[in-house]
Image (tube, rainbow, N blue to C red; front, side, top):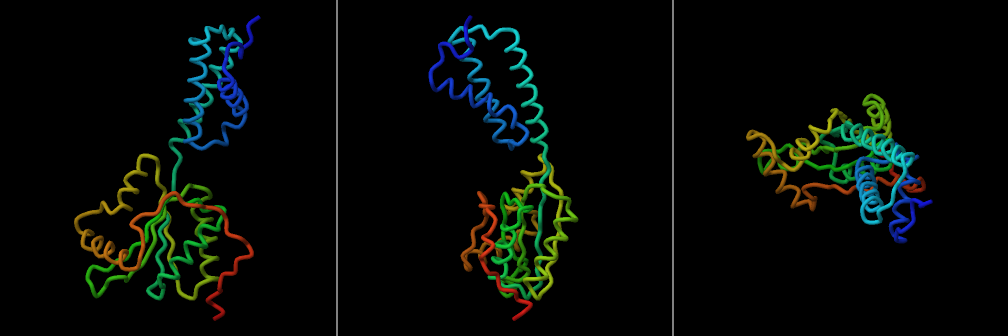
Length: 231
């Protein structure tokens, strides 16, 4: 009787074994991992059927069909996962160092999974340059908006002596690219003057126009953050 791995190279067997092992954890994968997974699976099945001329047997074929359906369903669900656009609006007392501290605190929160962010200002003239500093953050949907706002309010009230307004908008997959374009500066005509001043300001204070590939590793609990309410 022909075994499913007969005639396979060592590399093929490793891929096949990886597919089998990951089947039970498919629900834990993110969208990118699932796409990679199904691509690998389709590739190895093709090699099994055509290059090695192996008869998989009716039971194996049924299992593969079930597996493919499960994975594709997961891909479809995860491709429509909603994200949040988190906007942090501190008062004018907020300095650039405070902005960096806010980002540091956000990256330390397990319920804050940042995908990308931009730091902006609202000044429209040279005299206003740097006023109205704020942050737009594209993040994964982790908890209900009200819970995230509640936790962030508590954190900010402890660390800062000035008010910080928090706004969260829900973004679906279709809207995500529009949000990214907006963060890159593709805004309405009426906002272009402000956008130009923002670019000049960023250059002067050594900020990037856009931040992605964010390290969301929680901060070391031993790191001391100054509590500005006590100073």
